[in-house]
Length: 395
Image (cartoon, rainbow, N blue to C red):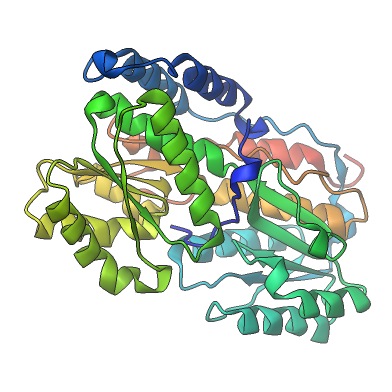
């Protein structure tokens, strides 16, 4: 799970070009389900039928749909990138970072992942490290808000080093004015697609009779927006559905999330779903369900597609479904935008590399490998796709 992956704001929720067909389907589903009433709720309801169609479409193997100019990638060779992640203590982030390094170095680019403890001071030090070694580009990755490191970004600009922001902004969202001239390029994220799919999965499985509890982490920039999309989608499908939210700070998930889930299930005895907005919530949430004695009646849905969590689905755990993003696909997307900057060509203007989201559950979990890995479950169309854009020797 990538706990700090992005800063989705409610004002930016909209259609996502990365999954154009699915985006249209989600939009149509939301519009068509607005008139669902109590009489329609439950198994076989119009809302449930609509949600099932949405989920079925999102279970399919994703296609590479990025339409961007090809460029001479050899111009990036021999250059150095310092990647400053939110923190590599998050397994998902560490896995993406490792994949980025592998891809970049295949093309002769020295990719340095700057390990840190996940504070603004650490991120600023990482940027300063890039300046110190004369990096050709610096990447702030996976939810670092540029507004909390403005002085460091200003120093990088003064040094003539471009800074990219990856997996911080929702598709369709640009950096705010305060930092717009300090960020050379972005790679954005389809948070709203994943959030809508979580809501649709619950309704597809349990209809409008579902009683979900949503876990949030208000201090994480992405959290509030993701939760709002989930709530709005549930309300659109099932206007009379009641949801409960519990707030657990990300730094306390390992210690507080289990008892918070247990307490919430005690206070809401009819609850039958836990909606986690990031994968690192899943294991302690499952522990809370088990401690409450409700492992047979409460299920979990989440977002990220972390391989260790996907294995829980294979093992028949109460974890029912993950809205997955390919670790390798994300890495290639981040490296693509970085290579464009290093090569002196225009980056993709809106940062939308059209990375997909795939619903992973019992129906297709074995596509992810046994055990699940970082290179399986999403096909390899993105590799051929990016390689066709990265020209070498004039080809």
